[in-house]
Each structure stands twice: as C-alpha cells, then as structure tokens.
Length: 110
Image (cartoon, rainbow, N blue to C red; front, side, top):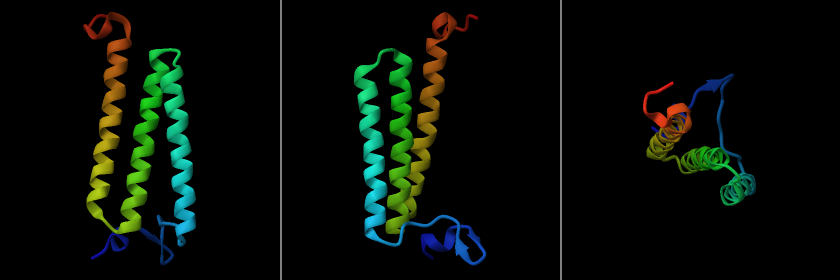
C-alpha cells in the first residue's frame, strides 16, 4: 500500500496531489523558501516579541508544508507523522507565548 492509496479521492482522482513535474515541485519549494526568508527578516528586525513569535509560527507552518510535500513526493508515510508533530508543537508554543506575555506573565493572575 502506498501513500497515494491512503489519500481521499473525489470523482476518481486524488484530492491532494503533488505537481506532476519536477519543475512544479521545485517552484513550490522556491515559494516556501521565500516564505522562510521573509520570516527570517521579521525575526531579525522585530520590532516586538509578538512579531518574532509570529515569524516563528510561520517557520513551523512552512516546515509542515515542506514535510508534507516531501512525504507526497517520496511516498513516505512517516514524514506525515513528523509534519503533524511539528504542527502540534507550533500550536503549543504560541499558547505558551500568549500565556507568558499576557497580564500577570503567566502567574495565573488576571
């Protein structure tokens, strides 16, 4: 059984698929690389901790997208597990940041 067999189908075709050419996949990877560079710029320039946290969230989201593309291109199911784990960790990190940056600094005070 391959990863393509596990993907949901609509009218006989897969709902989620990888571009049929290497050029299409390469273009997607270049767009994701540009997204990472934009996030790096925001991490370096700031100006606030919230801006830097949003850039870190962008890194997590882009990392998940890259892992999903690699999993679909290679047919490797475990890469999808890694992508899911990264997505959960990114969400937990935002919750921890908001809890620590809010009123009381995460000490349980409102």
